[in-house]
Length: 335
Ligand SMILES: [Zn+2]
Image 1: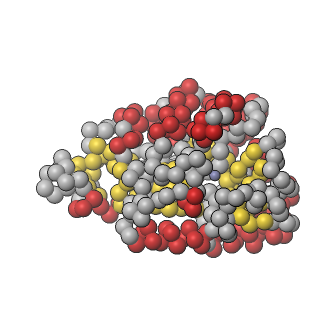
Image 2 (image 1 turned 90 degrees about the horizontal axis):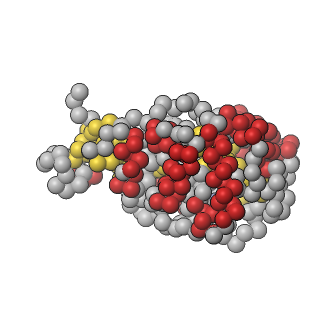
Image 3 (image 1 turned 30 degrees about the vertical axis):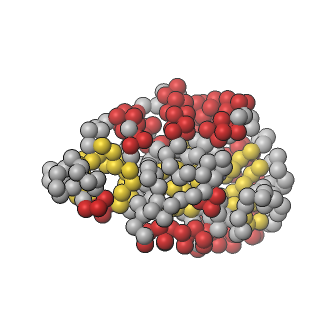
């Protein structure tokens, strides 16, 4: 399968030895390290670090997190500190929410200063995009929430997408309310920050988005909210999207009813279960947990699993035992 924002190979499992302090004491590899199986970095592709609690040492299970709405300069500083302190969780970010004047989430109490950027006209789009990229953003986030105030109009949304595309980065949209998923698709948005949950997408829109988009799962937030209707709509949309060849990645919306930046078992279970119903095989499912095909360039970190894990299916079953490590802590065995 090659659909997605970027083409990426299926995740490979390989044997390696974990050296030095990163290896568990008394690990299976004997005195000079611990034998492990390496996979691509397990990634939560939807977090809000300023609303959560990432320890200086990083997450115990996640090798990478993607922040989808925060001040890019503060996030860059946080990523630098994490890197310098030797944390094995890489931080990536999209920068501020680009939104219409007074639009979501400018009026929300949880929004930290600097994490929204209002855009009045198409002419302002390029500057808003450039501000995020100069702050190190690897995607551009837009909010299209029609039930919570004004949303960007079509020309302004298109100007944002064109500016981002011109800089080689995709746009990720929060879509909520009637017709917003269709608007995002029509304007060339490549990523949805959440599986759409406020309306069922029709067959044509599912097929269109499956060819062009990556969706970030965030299914379990509806169970955290106790919103059965939203859960059912989202799981059916995701099943329809995946069964038409769409690519999804794992994301929790960390910071929204969830504050611990670790692999979240209910989201894992939900994504695996919907994926299986849609006919995904183990390799496709495992890819969804590594951020591929949303963030394909390999991070400075990877995830390691017990050495006995040899197949994608075994890796899926062992996700809760994964640990992030820096690439530099691994020694590849001689072939
Ligand atoms: Zn979010």
